[in-house]
Amino acid sequence: MKLYDSLIQFVEQTLGPIAGKLGSQRHITALRDGFLVAMPFIIVGSFILIFANPPFAADTTNAFGRMWLDFVADHRATIVMPWTMSMGIMSLFITMGVAYSLARSYKMDPVGAAALSVMTFLLVAAPEKGWALPLNHFGGTGIFTALLAAYYSVELTRFLKERNITIRMPEQVPPAIAASFALLVPVLAIFLTAYPLSLWLQTSFGMQIPEAVMKLFAPLVSASNSLPAIIGALLLCQLLWFAGIHGANVVVGILSPIFLANIAANADAYAAGEALPNLFTQPFWDFYIFIGGAGATLALVILMAFSKATHLRSVGRMSALPGVFQINEPVMFGTPVVMNATLFVPFVLAPVVNAVIAYIAVNTGMVDKAIAVTPWTTPALIGAAWGAGWVLKASILTALLLVLDVLIYYPFFKVYEKQVLADEAAMESSNSESSATQQAVA
Image (cartoon, rainbow, N blue to C red; front, side, top):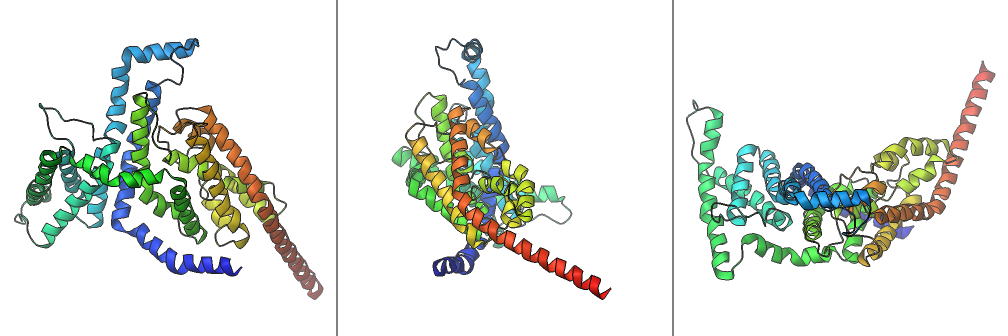
């Protein structure tokens, strides 16, 4: 218990405050908001990508599969265009969303900031060639540049504004016109700073800024596919959750650029018929590691739904539907799991075991890597298959992991159930004695 108490004390007194500050830090919040803006386009684009690459062998004799393959072969350019204009240009949506959110947190003009961010991104990531803009850095390879463009353009605008380096219009001028003139100096400042840097990189090293940024972040992206990195991220998430802090808001917020960069690279490789490079993606995190939410609590919900204890059975059945859709706040705070010493071990152990087994299965090719982004509220059995391009093996892996989670939780759950039953019996006995005393007095 001393180790447990020391761990909880560390989380509460050291890790908790740091995580709280990170979770509310404006740049991280803006990052999270920016990815939420891009998410609908990415999800729809994922649908298109799967439709454009039928899950049938090229020589299939299945009538439906043959018809689907032939249709795609005849109309591929038309079918792929919506993917190009959604998931294929995700970096454009991300830079707009991040800049908008960050500017709003500073009480600046968010629409102007979003427009300036887009201009900054286009300036360094898509130099015009023959009256056309190349789209090769609008997808996953441009994500980190999109973030930098958003942060830089907003912070530069704020820097100039705080030092009164701006164009001020008379009060009689309509606000919309005044705001547009206020952007003149930041636009000029972007041209005088970001554009020369882009030109210097192109002439000196033969690369554009997105390529240079990806080289800088390459070790981080590569490390994210390692098992120690995955376990480290999930352990941090679990410790924060156990202390009552929404760990996903902190950890996933930081991991989001890596998730999208990895899934975009997989999607590009899948569309080109090449081997998929990345294992660590949002579907891997959501549907293999955290089945039912942080702590893989769907297994606990299943056990609680059939508990002998009235409280646990009620909470388990109430939490069943949300748990299927990856929402586990009811079981986390209703059981409670938060700060529950009896359930601490399975709460941490189950996701770690899931991660190890899923890593081996995916890394060895037993189960396909993810190519599509799915809503995190998708039921795990469906989301796993969807993310892998509607591969049934992914759902089978999730189902096996869920059974294993139940086995991991079971002995600890029975201990906790015994404690709850004792408490319920004591409460019932106390209520009976109270009723008998009242009747005797009456």
